[in-house]
Amino acid sequence: MLDKIQSMLEEVENLQANSAEEIEALRIKYLSKKGSITALMADFRNVPADQKKEVGIKINELKSKAMDKINSLKENFAVQDTEWNALDITRTAYPVGLGTRHPLTIVKNEIIDIFSRLGFSLAEGPEVEDDWHVFSSMNFAEDHPARDMQDTFFVESHPDIILRTHTSSVQSRVMEKQQPPIRIICPGRVYRNEAISARAHCFFHQVEGLYIDKDVSFTDLKQVLLLFAKEMFGEDTQIRLRPSYFPFTEPSAEMDVSCTLCKGKGCSMCKGSGWLEILGCGMVHPNVLELNGIDSTKYKGYAFGMGIERIANLKYQVKDLRLFSENDVRFLKEFEAAN
Ligand code: PHE
Image (cartoon, rainbow, N blue to C red):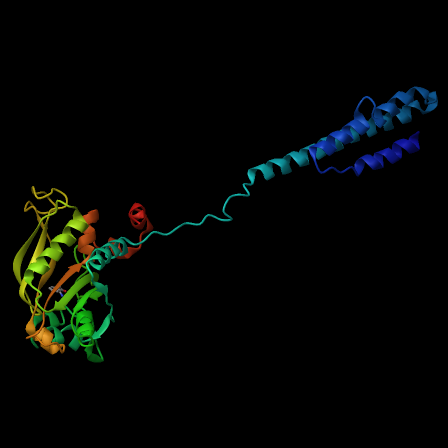
């Protein structure tokens, strides 16, 4: 009897199970009414009186070992079970934080989209430019203040090499290679030597447009810009053109749109005027055509240029220009819905 108890003790110690069902089967095998340990206890009656004490202790030890073992198997299994259930195998392996487009990219794409529907194609050029493409070919006089150190970043060792101050340089690069008809928009980053504040930065982004063909008129320009304004700011947007001056256009104008916030009634954004300035434009100066190899007696053209930050400000009321280049994700996340 003692030998039998001893071998069962060893057996019980090594019990293993892989499922709740297997554990239950073990419980039945050893501890149920018909289980082998229960049977041993029934046999206890037949143990000679002088061995009863020793055998009794051993049987009790076996029984409690078996119960402990089965309970601990249950516990292990329960832990594994909850861990398993907590694991969602259909979930993505790790959280993928999707980025959002930068607000300036959103607005730039919108501008490109509107003009490409009107037949304009995209043209791009270098940000580090020469004086010719930025100024001279655009009819800037030698002593024009825009060439001044105040406005332009020069490369110290090469005074002829500058950071472009407008994307008109791309217009020049296209004209020198291609004869009309030319219908392009030139988006890109431009640089001006200004103190950084909420309202000015040393770099910003522009989209300029150029159309050159026979019989291009100011009316065409006005119609295209009106359509742009309505597409960009809404069907009820109005425009007005004020006379202005640029070396590369004649006549030149600045265009205002009816205030996007108060719809022209007058508010703090439009400083009570009901109008917001958004771009410069005009008929391409004949000198610009000639300087870039286009016959000004045969062809005419119009050009316009706008700041993307300015348009984005009017659309989203961004109060501080610096936010556009600080890469603060809290700011960028605000444009998730516009993506
Ligand atoms: N190049 C001008 C600027 O940078 C914008 C402009 C482009 C104005 C074309 C008129 C015509 O301010």
